[in-house]
Length: 308
Image 1 (cartoon, rainbow, N blue to C red):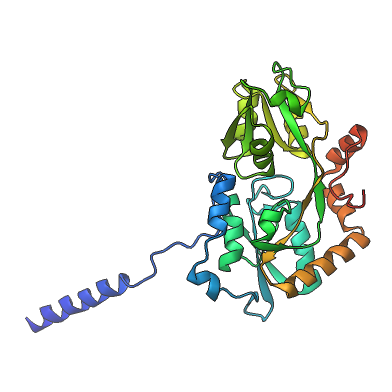
Image 2 (cartoon, rainbow, N blue to C red):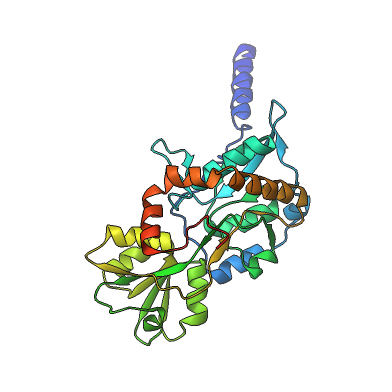
């Protein structure tokens, strides 16, 4: 009986130890197709201040070899700026730009794939040290986070259904017209402010908006010129592109936690040197050569031509 009791006691101890292990899975790579919040949802989420916000550290963590690790949040759903390669690894213009910054400033770069509506909260809570995700610098966002000097610019354009007879932005601002927008994007903000006569249909991502236009359920999709150009080329029989400028160029910036001046100064110094050394030309040649040729033919301002 004593032997049997000892065996039972040993089994119970072993069972209890297996229950003490960490059962959580802290996967930092969010699903690319996660739904994006509306502009109002983003603002509500951005303005929340939790205890974790106050406890978050501005300084990057240090790796085993002593090199500081910089957590960089981006939504890997916007090729060729933020995307994945064939092996599933983060890739694109923004990824290469951050790798170059890591080499410049002595950081190890850790890419955190984050849904769009979680990018600013990631900075506020300390889950990310910076954000680069083709994010437009706006006054509303500047109240919540700090931005680097602009590193790129873009203009909005319209992908129209071939049969909608849309030739300008004004043609969309009419009763009965349906405008597709990506939730929380500057196109969404523009439509809600300026296209008050039309029905604004917010969708979770660009591909959903393109499908609505291509299949005739929406008259137009407002987004940046590069996205509109690419999807027009992919759907030439069902869509048309309207590139007539209807607003000033948007400026994209790299975002940091409010008040992190040291990291901001490093970024601005890097961006100036990177441009001076032809870094943007290398990015264009690697990721955007075909688009650059098309933009030149259409006489569009290029993404990295910040002096114009």
